[in-house]
Image (cartoon, rainbow, N blue to C red; front, side, top):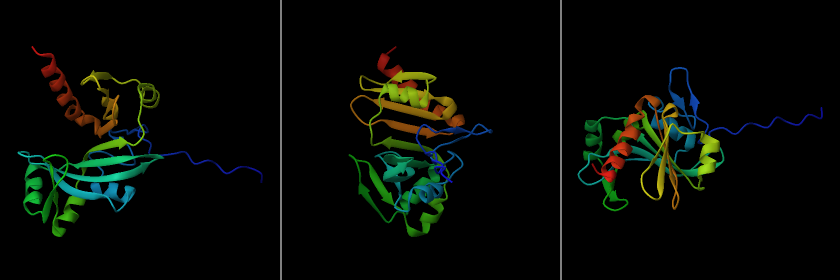
Length: 204
């Protein structure tokens, strides 16, 4: 009778990445390349926004985003990029009801009501999480483990790569950390730009 109630374990933390039997991963309760944007909206709140985001001269991408989510007590910003082809993104953008400037020259295209249901059903290609609290190297290694590789982008930013978890963690010594998650089989999407960038900065 005097037993204390069991403490429920905290779930949904950024380092709690389940590797599933088929090689897929689950993080924040979502499975990249399988879960949909609507699954994320159901988990993190109906105030999540969706739009086509495009820089000048680029086709853009379909993204859902929230400026404030809580994942297992960790607060931060979340951006989800949809796995849709360029033609679909172009169609959504052309039919947008309006657009607005975001950072710099990047524009946000607000979707027509008729396109919203279709857009929310799109699978998630990648998840970006930017925690409100700053991480340091010791915290990254103790929480996420030893990375398969570390790539320094510049004096401020170093990438910790976890291919089996589908995670690229960018540790920023003077700014916010950026955690990018994809399906492990699609990890080359995260690694290739880093390799190309570091190669170009080192010269021939």
